[in-house]
Length: 310
Length: 310
Image (cartoon, rainbow over the protein chains, first blue to last red):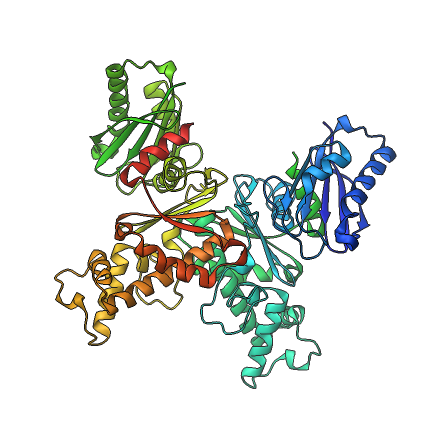
């Protein structure tokens, strides 16, 4: 087999990649995600897009190992989802349906777990078999790879790192209904929240007071300019995230922790603040665990999806 | 293949079980663990014991699937340990050495992970593929099973549940050098510590004040007699353990959590106090996770070791 497809289904677009089985990305493109009518068109649209691409490239089914699919929902090991927040799907046997539509082998997984697999295969986690990927975006997503495989769990809900409790004293509620979730401190939204609370606490001078929109980017920009108050905020962020990673490491014993998502665009400066607090709390067996920035950006999903089928 | 061996190496004795491959335990016995001279006699002693048993039963090597070994130390996927606290071994290629001594296939794993595997195969976790086992003894040990396999991790140190940080404000140090580890609250030693602190706090009446040795058993005995202060202690224990399990569940998504070790002899009454706090904090996807008491007692190690090789 020479080829495989990686499909990353999002609420707005479906990203698709055609790969050689050695990992070379030959082509990638996007189609619209049509979520109306319970998302009934999504899989047929993808199937059609794959068939057209195969015609265009002169590829026949016997040359294709299969199709991997990442989905923004818990997915069990049979490729079944119970519900989705953004696709319109309720219960759906994704792998089976896609196999019927294409006649090819299909594997499906949760999008965050799949992105972690992508970074392991072709990105910042290359050469590692045990890794954690944390995606710091609007929320905090995560994927745990154990011995080369995504930790799926009994409901396909493994690796929900954003909902680790890191503050037993929190009074504000997380979107999930709990209090003190990592997501409340380490997501872009969470960092903005920490910043607003710190600014309101006292009158300490800060570049941030002249900024129209105090968001995560503004905080890291100010930090790079040497703003002391921004550094306090980033220290707080680093403490929550670093301690959470130390707790995760004691259970999953990763050799590398990959930090991705929009917040990670702040760059290497980010890693120091996380590692400092990680090392403060980590179990001795995990002291050598390394932190690295994700490398694949938006391609992590299609890369990991393709790896799912190999 | 009809038979397999499960070997559970401890600091004082080695427990050995002869199993049919369908899980029936045919025979079990113990030999002394000779730890002198860097434990050089341990593996040869075990090999000899297995050979003698095979002669006794008229079993030939071609009838034996292999030998599984549980070891009280981190063990990597190749069956190598770097160091042991109680056996005298430093770096040791356990699987390779044992294969050379016996001519049979060998697999080795960490004893806590192996015990979890045993409960999955023949005990309280039967029928489950994703489970956590927590062993509440002098310390808190643990094993995490993911999709039927122990979570070993990159250094063989996966599943060190006892060293999850559950209290960021703790001032006393855990044996590992960190502060606030689950082991400081949920082990037999930890429960005794909670009891002593509670008794010292004020003059509240309690059955425990008349007890010579305030240990975990005394606390649970008093609880069963309706002692209010003991209930406060057990509530505190339950909160630390239940919250820790909720945090673990959000990452590993188990269908069942098995509670074992000496403390679990308190019986079913224990589970209610853990579950109460688990449910208070658990992520919605893991609400149905069940708590059960371990069933295999000291045989969990030999059972899980045997399963390692199958």
